[in-house]
Length: 271
Image (tube, rainbow, N blue to C red):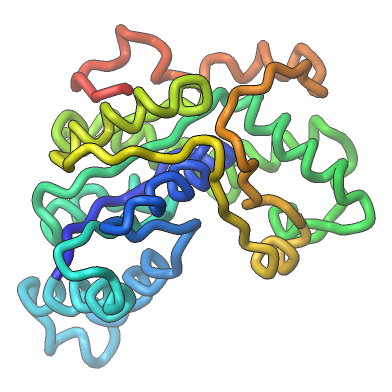
């Protein structure tokens, strides 16, 4: 009924902006993080263990997992394209390749320190609230919050960075990943979208870069960060001075591995 691709990568790196632009195309279905990845994980676990695991072979598991997408996106336009967004998808690259051969994972990326800067700015805008990102704890300092965000197992940035590295160095990287740096999308949105359409084999579409609309106020309020997924109407890159101490930038520089050509050993496409 529809083709499907995935949007993943790092938080605060342009995925919501990208979805807001893509959904201008009437053939495309795109939005912020969906629950489909969580549903897939829960169903996958039940089919592989417990008292009923014996009733499932690989073929049936794949059929059941694909059916989740069919059900969740049952109202998507026939013959259209669905972009499902979740940072977990880079950690499920092999499974996605078997479920949807030819599907791409579009990874939005940004320097880790600038992601922390963005999170800190959101916290400063809502000082009377505590965020679910930090388990509703205030954090002792910007250094402690940075450590929490960069934790490889539980951190908002660290966990996404770990699965992105896994996909980047994996054997499927060259034909599966498309990387979009935040600055490239914000500075050159029209050219970036044109290159993305070409990579996906889609017909060109004229996007309105001066009237981009997207907002998820209920979700943002529920995690204690109002405005987190609000997209500015005009697509533009705004220069600003960071509110982080300089030593945080220096310490996190090695995390931005995609900026080092010698580490692109799989030939991942970077727009």
